[in-house]
Length: 490
Ligand code: AHR
Image (tube, rainbow, N blue to C red; front, top):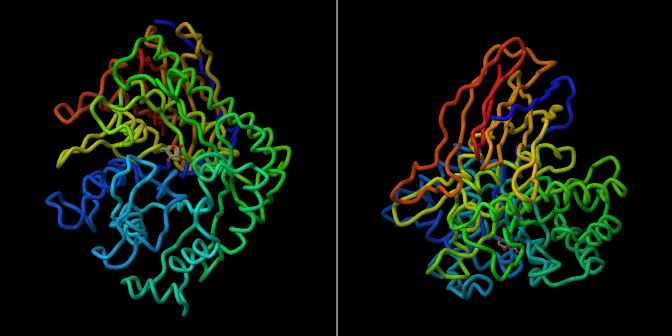
């Protein structure tokens, strides 16, 4: 077992970790909404307004702070008026992006906002700029948030909702450089400026408008957008980056059947998120040095080949301990960049890509990724403090073996550490200053890198209590191969 030193200085407060960094994303894609979280009011599966109770409970348990909807690519073809009113008379149409299946619009605005109320999370809407109109988006805001007398507020009332909802987060266009209209950044920036003008703050509601930011390393997109917009137009720009193990979108690799080499290349590609954020932030710093415009990584996670025999348009994949390490690395990166990263949304919440939850009929499984969100939840709304860990190199790609972040909230310190190595165990000896720790409690997620939970064995990968030693401000913890540990000190 190798020994590594770590330092934490709680007096050196870096930035606030917005709870929205622990956000999620749900698209009308495959079985994320339909036959996933939403089973309909008449289902035998216990539900609240059609959404599975076990899913709601699981979301509440990880303190889901924000949920993005209705897409994704779907958002730029979504016309919200198709999804309101009597369900039997809602339009049935083709989901052109995802599998060409019938979209019956039974999950729409009311269902989404009611779900967010049940979970206790902020709604984050992705507005249609690609194929919609300025008027359509303006009316959606009026429908949702206006308390007075107006055509849209009356329509909402006729559909059973007297009081408006609160809506903070509003994205205007999704991947406008791709599925959202294949626009050039100059054109998008002008369109964005026009659309956002008519998205009004009604009845005390204050919108937090989000512009479409870059795809991965498209630094030019960030440059032009930051040059064209200011804090009056936008509160944040988005970034999308997926971990594709092979780097080849036509053969991404299997979710469960992979070599150690592929594992390390997955982690290397995940850690690239740090470089992406650093470089996009440098451009943002140039145009917005006082950091009043945030960065929102509103799509991230692993993207593999779909499970054999499943609809290629449904993006259904299993989730192993490898995904848990990927989640831990990304969340540590977001925490460590929380001076600019104000929100992040894992793709996606249920049955799609790096899902939190998988469902099959009445059964529901929490994935290893879910357990990482559970381990990290005490970071939410904490203050990031200085931490440094000596590192070791792992795998042929020489990736850093250890990923960590530390925060303090209400006199409680949380340190989350991942051992990305599948070859080496480590003992971390951590010196803590600026914080009087009297007790430590630890939890661990650790399993074979290819281990996963399925409907026959749902507890194969699960968190358990763990041991860590605390003596005179020194914390000692052992990290088994391929593990994620959360330490809570009081
Ligand atoms: O999450 C799946 C898809 O990935 C989203 O619809 C799109 O925004 C991205 O390309």
